[in-house]
Length: 212
Image (tube, rainbow, N blue to C red; front, side, top):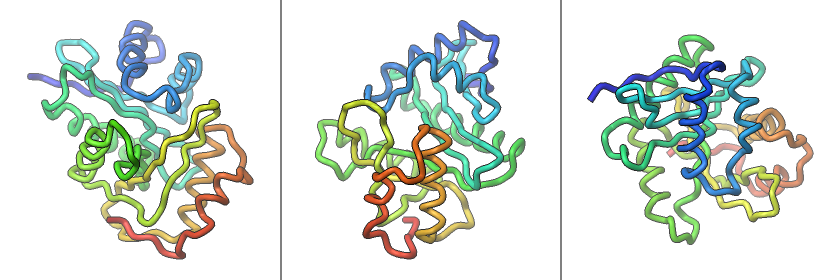
């Protein structure tokens, strides 16, 4: 099975539609962006949408936010067609996308948002497998820290965790993490740095957090 990894072209309308078909069934409605927002991402120099293909068919993707003005990258979304899971496509896509980003943009910590497997949910097994998948790739969870996804809809935000991919970081200061979260809220989700959810997240956060 030959898997190719490449960035999605702004002019590839069919490719975008194939990406969107996987996207819209892979994430809860509360975590999704609109099709118009995704088109804006495709045309932004701050983002790259990487796709994995088998026989020229898009079977997976990941979206990486890589602004020069931030001290991190955000793997905002990643999904594999459910019929192609378990074949090692996800790990190949992750490493290829991250390494290409490092090569073009420089090496920075990569942050990943995941639904917390600790929250009571009928998707608990899926969440546990997702966290284990990223940990096998070398990502580590920031603890103790509960992340509030800055969704704009009326739906209740799920309990989230943040993972970090970077070989040289063993822990992170509260001030550094707050800078990352503020930038995610403002650059990615269009919120403000004085968003009350940020204060809520950091009200009882220790000065140093571990990556586990």
